[in-house]
Each structure stands twice: as C-alpha cells, then as structure tokens.
Image (cartoon, rainbow, N blue to C red):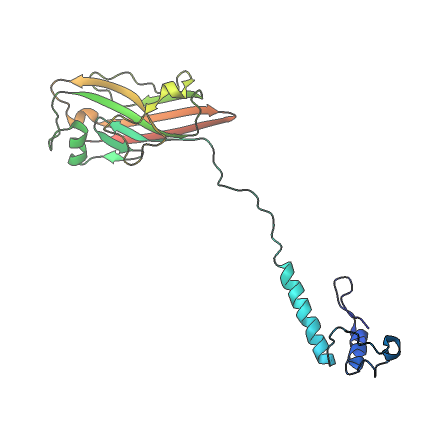
Length: 236
C-alpha cells in the first residue's frame, strides 16, 4: 500500500493505524502477498509504530514550515535615493572662510582675514568677498536667482538684498578654485559667487570686515524650486 501527503497535508490517524498494523508483515505474510506473486516488490519504508509515524509527520511539518519562511518580499528598489540639491556653505571674507551660522571674534581669525601676519591689518592688497554654494545634479541651464547682503566696505560693490533676475546656473557661479577663503576639504560640486571686491592700498583693518553676511540662492530644476540661505557674522 502507499501513503503520502494529501493536498499539502498528511493522511489521518486511520492511515497511521493501518500503516502500523502492516509494518511488520513480510511480502509473503501480508494480505497483499497473493497479489504480489513470488517476485519481491520494493515497498516504501513505513514507520514501525504509531509514535514513529507521528514523529515522521511532525518532522515533515517542520520542514514544510521552515521552507515557507524562505519566501522573501521583492525588493522595493535598488540604490540610494538621490536628486538635485543646493546648500549655501558659507563665505570667503577675504582670506578667511566663515561657515554658515558662525561668528568670528578671535584675533587669529581676524588676522587671517586681512593676511596681517599676526596683526589685524594687512599690506596693500585686493579684497574679496565670496559666497560658497554646494550644488549637486544642477543642470547648467537651470534658472538661478540670488540675493545677498554684506557689510559696506571701501571699494566694494552694492548689495542685492532681494532675489534678482534669473540667470543660468553656469553663468551665476564659478568653480571653487579661488585659492583662498574657500571651504576646507574637497571642492567637488562646490561653487562660488563673488559678492564684491576692491583694493586697499593702506592695508585693510580687521574691523573693515565687521558685520553680517547673508546669501540666498533659489534654483529651479524641473518641477522643483531649491532654496538655501546662509548667514555669518564677523566681529573683529
């Protein structure tokens, strides 16, 4: 006789009792001997007791249940989400980089700003004020508006406190290759905008840079409008 699974399950206890009853029979001594003839027929191994049969069924259930655990949900996607972004990092106050939300008060930082070799005044030199922006995946032709404000200093340009006319990203910003006053670390995807420049033949005093610096950029990329603002203070 045969025994096995029925629709993913197992036969009932009636099948088990019958299996156990016939477990010890030989090919010639079993009720099936007359039908099998004298040729030996291989029969499936059957449990020799009710307890053994129950153990075998329990083992199969455990294996079947364990197999179901290996069904995994499909992945929702690959890679990390990414897209265009823009962040105003800070300012180049002449030779000193000032990060967003920072306040400069130390003599060392003030000296760096004016290249004074330890003194808060520098030799005759050009003066530069820069804003530094990190832009990722921004198309070169993306419409870009800026607004900025910084302390009035001798020979510096005019402030633009409200967003001006849109211009392409690529013509608004240049690469961060100025050589001084730029953010530390990698300059990948870092751009700069010249707020103003001038010269001081007598050498700038650190106090010439005192005040608040702000810069806002707004850029349209597809259906998104990305905006960022930074503010920093120099108090020398």
